[in-house]
Length: 397
Image (cartoon, rainbow, N blue to C red):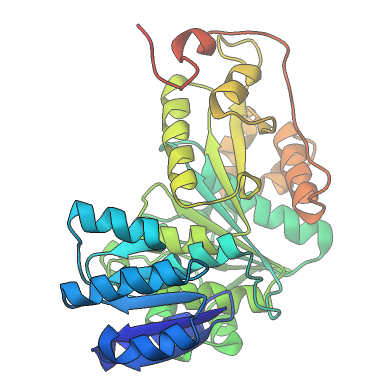
């Protein structure tokens, strides 16, 4: 996909070019240093697929609108200015798809262009090897970290695949403690701060080998050290990881920030973990709206119902109707076994190989290896949720 950047700032352009070069898709990036007045003739003669304009005055906006109207197949990204409502409406009608009023960093601009690339069906780089699987909680206490860590174990055990578990809960991450009592040689923050020289060899030297085929990169021990990790650093980390591993399992935690959104954008699958209670379901619907605003296709999102027990007021069918999905991954409640696994720092498959939780994780690993086979559990009972939410998902009195 051809991307042309128009900007009076060579420093910003250089930064954006570096970020786009590490994108999961291949872009042919060209540049005009200056304003739209000097770039207009060339753009009219050879319009790019995506025009990125760092606007500095109203004349730039007028030229952009005229150019976009004349070339309706060209998508436009406007940087640096906030048009008034009337100007904005005209620009959006003409073909401006993204408006970033402040000058973005490399990760923000890359994410905007990624959204346009997905709409255009631009393929990923051929060098991509591994799947990136992100786990996040709809609400605190969902058990997402336990599932992420133990799914990484299941993938490595079943397929003899190379699997890496990355803990992106940068302030209070503890994913490694769920499957090992060892401490790794490095952590996410240290690796991210060396992203400019990060390659496969450096990444491998930073990992703890938990078991044959399974490696882990822990969250930083000091919450403060993860505060300055940047999205573009995580982009590089995930790019290198998936070029060297069959599966990259990422525990995001609960916080939604630039780092988390970078990982979600790059994920092949997002596993949103919730429980069958109204607070979880409300937050799940909010998270679903966020996914829609990010233009994630429904096939990318996998809803995981953890600690499921039959016989409650709410049923699986209620949850499916609320989330408007036909597929749910269910993990049954087996509190004693899970508690033993967590307290000992040993994978649940080692503690209780016949536990229904172990089987559910094995089924998840199977469905990831073979996406044409999906485990979906249904219930024919009707429950309370249809009385609590109307068709639009709004609580009624």
